[in-house]
Amino acid sequence: MTEGATDQTRPEVSRRRWCLVSDSFARPAFTIEQIRTFLIVAGREHITEAAKVLGLSQPAVTQQVQLLERALGVPLLERLGRGVRLSEAGEDVAAACLLVMRALENLEGTARSIRGLEAGSLALGVTQVAGSYYLSSALAAFSAAYPGVDVDIEINDSYVVCEQVLAGVLEFGLVESPPQTRLSCTRVASDEVVLTVHPEHPLAGRGQVLPEGLAGSSCLLWDRGPVSEAAPAHLIGAPIQGLPRIRLANLEAARRMLLAEPSFIAAIPRVAIADDLRRKALAVVGRRSLTRPVCAVRRPGGVLSPAADAFWSVLTDPVRHVSGTPA
Image (tube, rainbow, N blue to C red; front, side, top):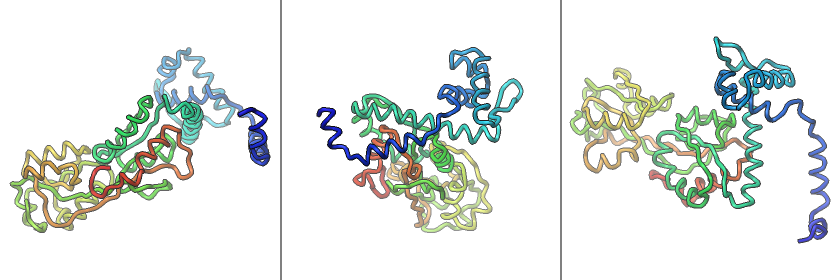
């Protein structure tokens, strides 16, 4: 199509809209390199280490940060021994700078998407359960469709993942029972949690939790945060108050302890112990279970990079929404 033909088919109002938007932007008093330098210093918490990463001298790095502080009018760093740390204002500025750098990556990603997502990267966060049991098929489908895109996956609890998505550190996340946040949530699966014990535990196979059957038991908590304690409390009830609690913060470690020792009890996702239940290596206590939504979360109204947008489409495809089984 010729340039003249393009001008004739493009509405005049569209050109006017872009012109008015671009005219409203003020020229920033800082540079992209100053932002990048500041973020690397904040991440390393050390000027010398940041200088090595950047390939600059220590005075040059210090000057870049000072120029950014002068442009913004707020102190960004505080001295801490031989290192530095973010000031209170620096925390807020760093979060905003991450959004700026992410937007620049999105700009480069947009150009790459025109070439068919031949290269690029995206960062997402998942919980232990979501990452281990509800992500694999979507990840495999995405990697097959876009082999040139690198995917960085951070594993953490639901609260941390949601906070990092909201701050722009991660583009989106996959979590169970997302806490009340300002994030947009799309349910992709359902996860069932059951009370689990060794087959030799006094409560193995019982239809209800009997307080006397809990004598000598310890409750394993395999995740951080209130969600970890809410599940066993829901399934065990009041008797849980008298149980010793062992915090492992690792699902596989809790599973292995249940397999090895009859004195442990834990609220475990059924999908994580399905094979153990079939082999009768583990047993379920009671008839109650706890169903949790597995949700993809993103900033409301936020623009994803082309790579992240493509992954989001695969992950939230309604065909993959299967209750109680991996997505």
